[in-house]
Amino acid sequence: MVFSSHIFLFYFLPFTLLLYYLFPRRGKHAFLTLISYVFYGWSNPLFTVLMMTSTLIDYWATLIMVGRANPRDKRPIELLDPNSPRTRTQKSTLIVSIVSNLSLLGFFKYFNFAAGSYDSLVNMIGLPGLSLDMAFRITLPLGISFYTFQSMSYTIDTYRGEAKAQRNFLDFACYVSMFPQLVAGPIIRYREIADQLERRTYSSRKFARGIAFISFGLAKKILLANPCGAVADLAFDAGSIGAVDAWVGVTAYAFQIYFDFSGYSDIAIGLGLMLGFVFARNFDRPYISQSITEFWRRWHISLSSWLRDYLYIPLGGNRKGSGRLHVNLALTMLLGGLWHGAAWNFVVWGGIQGSLLILERLRSKNSIYHRLPTPARVAITFVIVLFAWVFFRAQDLPSAIRYCGSMLGFATPQAGASLLRGVLYQPYYLGTMILAAVVTWACPDTWDFTRSITWPKAAWAAGALLASILVLCTQAYNPFIYFIF
Image (cartoon, rainbow, N blue to C red; front, side):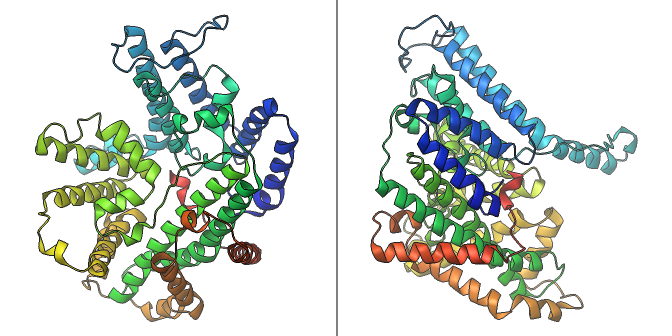
């Protein structure tokens, strides 16, 4: 089930909110956990087994880690001392948690990729008899990358002494499975909402801001991301096209992925507010960035901070010299690229991001680039991001290289390219892209705009919601591009 669907908006959400507020405080988490499992298992109930497996492993791992695995042990659970040495049991339980979660993620997300890469390799070196040639394929469970990272961070934080183990299984299961952020993030760390699981406030102000978040999130997704996605699909699926058409297509994709993902994050934050939870910001106008380093401070903040705290810093961060720093950056972004999708073009995308981050570290603060005016630095960064997005969007690596060639004018447009232009430059699509650009560079982000809900802002939110629902009723194109995650 996805947020931008009739079933969710007109049936699931009203039903959930009604019963949630009817339940007493002690029953709210049980109901929220149950309804979240219904939400997650809507397309395939077997997916819920994987999420429950991950939940059980990390729940018991942390209780064993803090010495409270015996149900009869009612002693209070305290934070582990960050400075005290860890026992063999504590180290073992952490390893079990990490290996279990990564094994689930690795098998279901990367088995097909690994098998296909192996077959390609043995065929390339002339040993086709060693190929696997598997007829079956592993189905990728929705959101597995998000909830495994989320659950794993809880165990790691408990081991580090940064989070307190949760004795109440329902509270922990509610944290892992909470449907607003389950399928497409943001990645919520347990320590960020531990206190909210114990006690949280409900207010009309929170509820109103939640509705505003949902309204603008739906508008981003339905009114902007979907039409831009249609333009991007036309360009990327067309084969060899002209340079201008290629730039239009990749710009449309940049708008699509931004408004699709930030729109889903807005809806998740809004749903959380309506349920009494306050989730952290996940996007901060990334396309106004003046460097790739700044871009990653603004784009998918929950993932970039997760990679920093649980991968880059444990690898050594910047504490072991510039050479090791560059290696750590490269590894972090390569693995971050692979996290986004099981294909070589995602690995290349991660490699591009890592290389750019390293180059920016090497660049002098007195360079010509730093003396450019702000609009020029924003434009240059955006163009670099566009080239990187090609590898993110293309079906495979050869397709990405061909598309970059089209952007640079090296490709000869194939017959029928003029027909493509007739569709790409329809007034509806051009108008949508212009509106997307205005919202991207001239309008405040949802997070900032909804800090206070005034009557004019409420009118804007109501208009955005109404327009989104009307278009949703007639819009056949409504992809969920984060399915691969």
